[in-house]
Image (tube, rainbow, N blue to C red; front, side):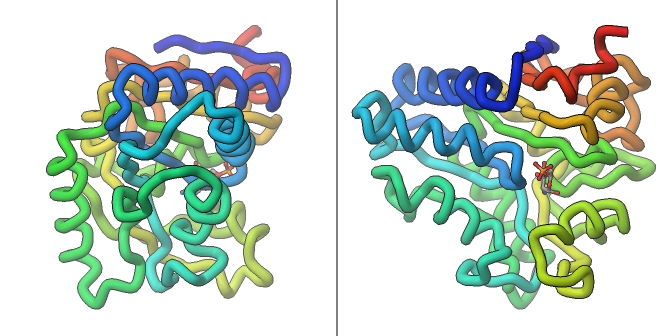
Length: 243
Ligand code: GLP
């Protein structure tokens, strides 16, 4: 695992966007694993800017997102499909038919998880996976638990995550209590992984991810077993690493 401490959020986003752009240049039909949350917004802005400057071409790129809230359709402005369209896909030359987000309104959520797992496998796996991290160490929506979940599954969100994500909704009651998420096994199959974290609220979980025991109680800690992971943190999120 490589850890890069950047001066600030802007530098973190610039460096990470270059890695994704380089991947696309080297393999124009690559599969990008994408993430939501406030952390990757700056990186997506950088990619849009690079596209506008003709430095990157998304016409053959395919994407798979990590997760989606159960019960929210793609036109709900809190859904992760909406987030991806709004922050990235609507501003670049990607074919939306090549973009995948789990369907949060599928009648049978379990069947949707199985379908999604097949979608990822059918694309030949993810070339480079972007991750954020929850304050409690969750990646995608793999919450702290007793065993690492392997495949795409339906998850009950923890109170910690519901409270953390309530800032995007008009009230806590509106935050969905369930989500569909790639499993830890699905994520670990990606050829490369880039995790981004910024701000003081992430400092403890970044310390636990890098130095603590590898345990499903800190889901991101398993990334230490992956052969190609780079973690970018700003100085605040990396503050405890220096001690
Ligand atoms: C959500 C997403 C995660 C994301 C996390 C952190 O729970 N499912 O993929 O990493 O939020 O979000 P933020 O970047 O806003 O701190």
